Every structure is written in structure tokens, then in C-alpha cells.
Length: 335
Image (cartoon, rainbow, N blue to C red; front, side, top):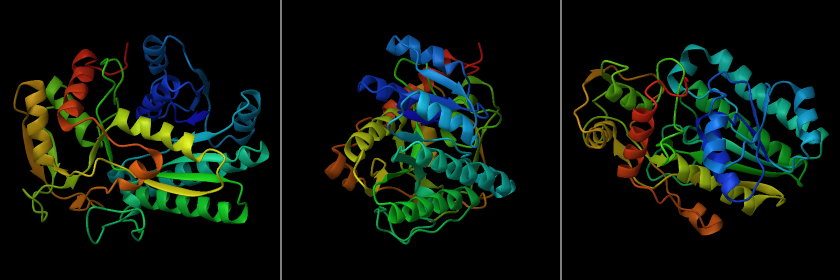
């Protein structure tokens, strides 16, 4: 299984889940937002190091070489820029990386006759939903360039599959991944200022940042802060394995929400993480960010019915595992 973006947060944890299920992941990553040091952590947990290629998903010749040399049977595609706020500031970079990278990958797969793709999509393709919980058939739209890049890629995959029905395209729409491997040796280690809530919380708790910024407290929610469906990264990783095993070789477009079906507000997350780390976290309220919506959580019933998958780790585990990772690795993967 080729895992693009395999050294990243979700890619590396999915690599663990693939290896635990007996698959052979081959990792490809340009390391623009990840660290090669994660490979040693994977080896320490599993007893073997996955094969790794330092390459860009936009390099078609290199991709074709890897697909052929490694006799790849399926691809899980994570390689993308992924921050909503950043995408509103540098949209061209997001379209160049996310769209071009996927188009080049598809051309390489086509050339090498690899026809199974599991795509890392996002709940952002639902835009600002008319109601929650969100189901897979809801209309799609996007409120920011990141979400729009994911939505366009979904449409590209659907068009290709319609033209060439032997392709198996699986679209996994994640909600908000958090947490870390229970060993405390692997977790989320963003470069620069975190764009997501949990690594910001952990860095405030460890003293790397002074306080948390909460963007908006005037949303029509339980306490005025945004509500999201937070899912443990290992539950998410196991969802990829289930999807791959269920959909491999089955022509069609297979779409699943991966979430818990529960929503928590930012302030509820702050309180839960304060309990996990044992002290209160300072925060201040900032203006809303462009592209953010009030609330978003999944109806994950389809994944449970068709894949036999459901999230099993609760909010306490998400916070405890995140804190174990950050407190054991105060500077992330830096040796």
C-alpha cells in the first residue's frame, strides 16, 4: 500500500494500523509539514521500519518508479496542505499542492495500472451544513480554499471513476482528528504555529505558548464557541484500514464520514484537556476566523453498517493520549 504523506500526523498513525492488520505500507513524503524521525518511532512500536521515499507527489516519474518497484496494489492519499485559516491567505499554494498533486498521482496510478485509491477528504466539503448531524448525501459546498480543494478532488475522482468504472475510489470525510498513539511516542507535531485546536492546547500546557486563542465566542452554540466532532487519530487510522479492505478492487465511488457522532465546543475541549494535564489553561477570545462555521458533527452510521467500523475512544482518552505525547516530547520529534 503506497501511503502518500505517510510521515504526517494521520499518515503515520494509519501506517501503524496498516502494519497491525498485516499490510505492507510504503511511505512517500516531501517532509514539508512532517518529520522523518517518525520512521524510527514506527519501528520502535511495530518492530520494523516501513520503506520510505523522500519525494513529492507532484513528481510523476518518481511516483511511477515507486509504484512499479514496490508492486503497489492500492494507494492511500494523505499528501496535502491542510489548514483552513492558512488556505485563505495563500490559496494558490493550496490549489497547486492539493489539486496538482492528486492529478499527477492519478496519472501515475493509471500508467501503472493501480486502480484502488483511498482519499483523505474532509468534513469541510459540506460547507456550512443546513443541519447536523451530517450525512454523506448532504449537498456539498466549501467556505474556504482548503475545503474547496478537497471538494474539487472528490469531483475529479468521481469523474474519472465514471469514465473508467474499474477504479475503486473511496472518499473518507474526516471530522476533527486529535489524540496520539497510546505509547506517547507518536503524535501531532505541526511546524510553526498550530492551526488546529489540540496541538495548540498541548503546547500551551507544556509552556511552549503563552495562551490559547479562541476564535469567536458569539456562535449560536452551547457556549458561543465553535462545536466540532473530535475523533481519536487511532480510530481514524483504523477506519482507513477497514475502508481499504472493504473497497479494494470494488469499482465505484465509496463515501464515508469518519467521526464519533458527538460535538464538543472549544471551551468544553479546554476544560477536558485541563483535567488531563492537571492545570487550568489560559486563553483569550479573538475575532472569528474567515471560513469557520458554528457547528459540525457526523452521522457515522454508514461506516458502521458497511465497514463494520466505529470510533471507540472517548474524549478523556483523546486528551490523555495527546498530553502523554506532548509531555513526553516537549519539542515534538526534534531529537
